[in-house]
Length: 282
Image (cartoon, rainbow, N blue to C red):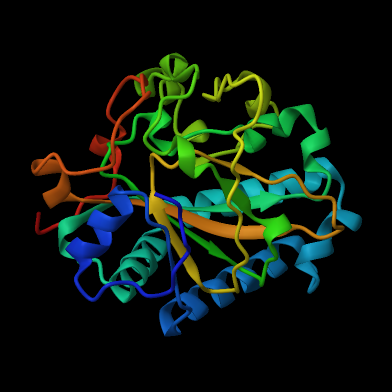
């Protein structure tokens, strides 16, 4: 099924989830909750980086300084309860029931112009499925940009591979091993050499898939797609930093009903769902 990036999210969340598990991709319109969230995040980034022009902060900060400051913010967004609540509000705004959903907290993603030339950032550009990181097949991924972005600034899906196996090394990923030294890898990019030593699964295709489906998106809109979608961040050297938030959500009814996208090639080990933030009432 070819993603159409439709803005028409069904009123029935079960229908939304079912379509996502069949390969559909939705872009939820920006709303009061999403715009409040990205404004909060942009203000915090500006304060931490000591600049009003956060998209060009790389021009005034050294690579190490920028990395350290953003690493501190990653911990805030991932660990603090106030951002967990903002995420509950966000998924509710798109029809999900927070009392029946578990989630892997939000992460701030940063794509520097020309970042694909940095060997330490190589895993950022690997073609992959999120399920290769020990997530369940009922995983739904949310992705919200802080700025309006053109196609060349986002990422691309390979729809022909949605339900077809691709050669990959997902068997290298063992969640227990991933977290044995603490939460740094789970939070993401807490150590400068993580991209060289972390063991990130990737596609082993010798040539890229024939069909690549890209998209543009506006600030505060939220892309929703199955965790088993095969996709890749696009390389860009446009002079500005791309900031976005992403999160992973699983409806517990889907887990208990064994409902999700097809597993065609995931060989990762472990169960990250046990460490998701679960609803108190579940």
